[in-house]
Image (cartoon, rainbow, N blue to C red; front, side, top):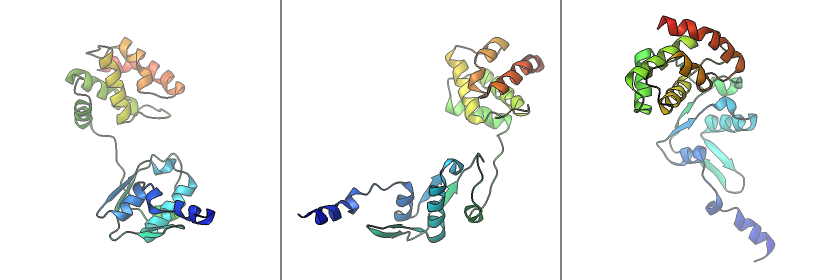
Length: 192
């Protein structure tokens, strides 16, 4: 085999690793989730724009892969940066608020069943109060889960000021927020 033939044989379907976008185009019906698209680089965003415009992707060495039936595409964003207008025009928007108290408690109990009902309600109640504070990054459900898990692993069955202060790093991620929250903890614990 001469070098040119050997080189051509490298660009073969058997060496192509089909990632989620390519798989969604090939396998229909399909749902493609692109989580936190705002964290992707500009090149990926341009690539995604091509896919959403034509429901196909061109692979120079292999040709074009087109979807027989377009996938249902879900993009999530935390708005850490703005997306390009061309991409936003191809989207329908749905904003999701934080869950209410009972729903968030149910989420904690389903994801962390070892966390007791009392602790789950106290943690969720405290997190929901923290969301109303002027924090750089208000805690999301992931932080609620992290906090409940940390407290449970420390053997805490009821939230108290000391355990809340010791595990604060599970729920707030900036020093400025931690300073604000430490001042508010006494007030929050008293109002429970």
